[in-house]
Length: 272
Image (cartoon, rainbow, N blue to C red; front, side, top):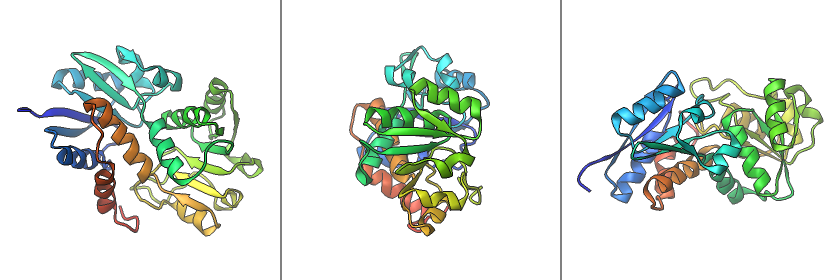
């Protein structure tokens, strides 16, 4: 391969993302000549324009464009269509096809930690990551309950997948085995924020946060203090990124190399 293949991340914000670092480490280990650049964009249409103008072969899509970008693509994979969110795009000779690797990334990481079938999961949030989580958990035999502060959006998501829903104030009355935060609350640099009050966490035996920077968010620190088993977002971040590379290249990426690159940057103790 004589020329580099171009890949990219699109979102707003993107400056804090470790995707360029992680994907770069994977491509280096694979000896795959590629660049991976982060682009801060203002709308979903700009994502498509940039991909086509710059000849980008594959793209990651993050907050807040996972849902809105779908309308601008030529084709959407069946699972991504059912989820209603895309986090991965492949450019096949100018034809843009959308996929979703958040669900597979979550399930692969969650399965390394806990059983899924027969368990009840509270999903905090109602955006693209929440939609992927609900879809994936149902596929694996789990029972999700959607909790979000905006009742209309929460009800719409839950109704689409046929699951229960509630508001944050009702969490203390909901029975569930595991709580998964899919919102960006607590993400660097706003590390003092948390999606739930500490006293609500004692009800759950397990708490997972999709936020990976910092490794231990305020939510996870408080959950640990309440006796919960905790899981950071690093594993899911690595697995969803690895699934993207597999879709783009057809090759199995070096997941442990990707994880090590992320953890070295964050610090084993959850620095930022």
